[in-house]
Image (cartoon, rainbow, N blue to C red; front, side, top):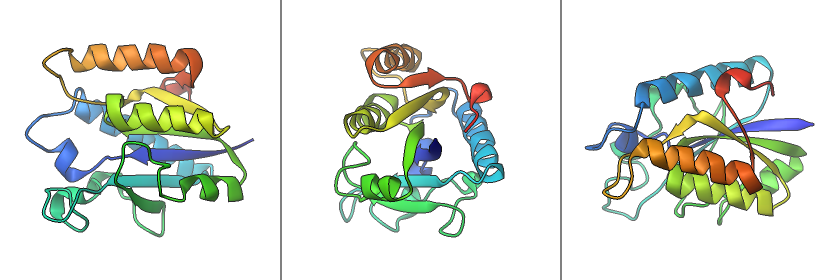
Length: 174
């Protein structure tokens, strides 16, 4: 069974913005560990950037739109692409790329849990992929209604029930 790692919206403006992501440094370290493991095992890495309209802080090419430099991802080491909706499959060609490489298991990490992680995980399942949500490698910020930890816990439980296998980064074996 072939696998791929999908890194969602780990961008300068989201990660280092006015609101800090919950356990951001630990999440980043876990993702860096998964990138290293994927490279070692020659597992394809896909990284997507959320792209806002021209003039927005995360417009294509802006400083905040860039992937985190700490991830050390570029066009030689990963397939980089952009999205404008929470679902990373919407109008991106991602499904076709995964299908052409015969990838079944899609390991999901990144930001933000209740938006792009949730939407992409559900869409992957609907497309017949086998999503694997890495419980300790996705994050978000506190909201007025819920703490980030409550959002993360809820999504790990909900997505793990019907849409994905949920495991911790230490247990990943591509």
